[in-house]
Length: 70
Image (cartoon, rainbow, N blue to C red; front, side, top):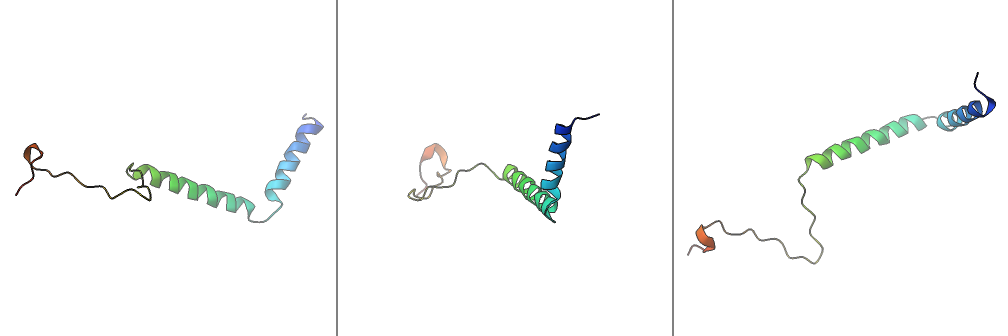
């Protein structure tokens, strides 16, 4: 038989979870958004965003020996 303290802890937790309608559904919605964001972050390539003052990157020319075609 559980003692008085564990029963009080369970009752307090149940009160906190069920005291406000929609609280559990709100938590589940936030959890779902977090999982979707995590999966999206995993699927995107790892390129750091450019800093505010950095010039745009230039792609090197793909000619032989690095010489530019004229």
